[in-house]
Image (cartoon, rainbow over all chains, first blue to last red):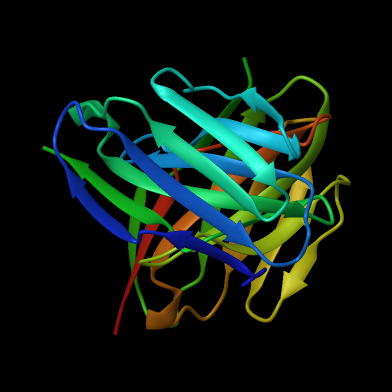
Length: 110
Length: 110
């Protein structure tokens, strides 16, 4: 399972509230990614990180920010959640030119 | 803009049937093509293909890449109910950023 955990696994929140999702890895991988998965869209990259304090935007970064203060943790923050951010969020790491995914967080914004 | 298209969108077969899933792509600076299987959880890695014409095989699953025609196929022989899942195709560019297709939903009936 590539040693990736995500928390929380499920969250229901209200529009306008801040939300932070956490991705934790135990194998010291340099690259980490946040994706969202929606019906009909497959997986889309939100942000990624290539080291501590080094992050960059993906395809659908609007409304999201990230931080990586330690190699093992990559945080995704929705500053003010909207209903369009209801989705399943997956974290991934890169190893041997392949990306491996965490178990996912199902976020519902009411 | 990189693009990955999978077909069919969904497929229903009976146990023992053989299925072929298709993936076509357009990508700047192609690095590799990856197949994932997704049941009710995170995508799990199946194959990574980088060279044309070389078949990758794992049990009843096999895949091949055609870099000239820009497509890949995933074959599953003697299907079982446990093969029921969404199959995702993704293409990596030179920076190892993945672009995913929308997936093919396979249902295998007993």
